[in-house]
Image 1 (cartoon, rainbow, N blue to C red):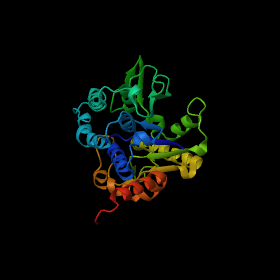
Image 2: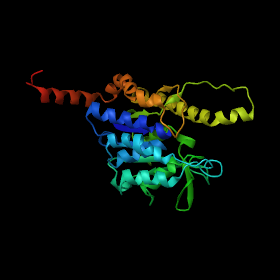
Image 3: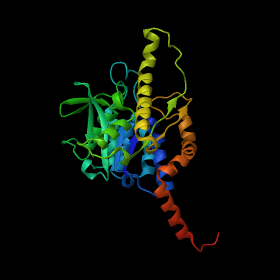
Image 4: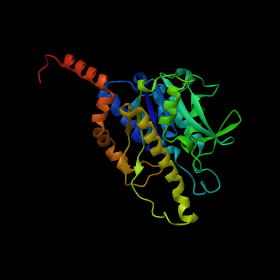
Length: 302
């Protein structure tokens, strides 16, 4: 079985993704970068995917979002009006501090990162097995350069922005790469995907009959949400029981530059709600873990 982990974009809400991964490693006694054959990330998902691939400890990724990520989202009042809201250099410092000097060649598993070429308007995919001279940190920064929030990221004279423009949920990208003859050439029946989202706002649109001004603030989040849900439907239809999606509804205001209180207080609870499906997804590993636990505890007094 070819196992794929897909991580959505979502800015600071990547804390949820990191906490889910930390819980998975604890519950099933695994290293995610050893269990999965391919890890795919967009935007904040790319940050986490890159960290996992170069063997940053799961608890340190969670800590990064709690303690360090907020430093990236500091700006002056005029920022965001005359230039991007936040400084890309702060994002680079965050990545350098956590990735150390590790690059694509140092990844423990196959890594794929999505971005967007703004000149050609074409999707861009960075691959650890064929980096074409691009550094891991640059690929991640390209994927995480959300318009308005960060300046486009330059690589070899080209400018890139957030992969969420076309693939906020990279599950379908991962599936195509897995079955493509130019990729891993796997059979559909031999693929399973675990996809982790960063939350959906449960509020309905209030201005569905309004004009340009009212729609302008809703159209981008609506497009991203529709993109994510469309990919979920298509991928699940193709893989059926071999596709598992972890996501949740959040009544708090959702943005990329702060962690909603709901996520901070409910991440472990949300994980617990998915443990039944996760046990099935990791069934062989779960059986093995319980077996080892019984052997280890055999003869001990309770």
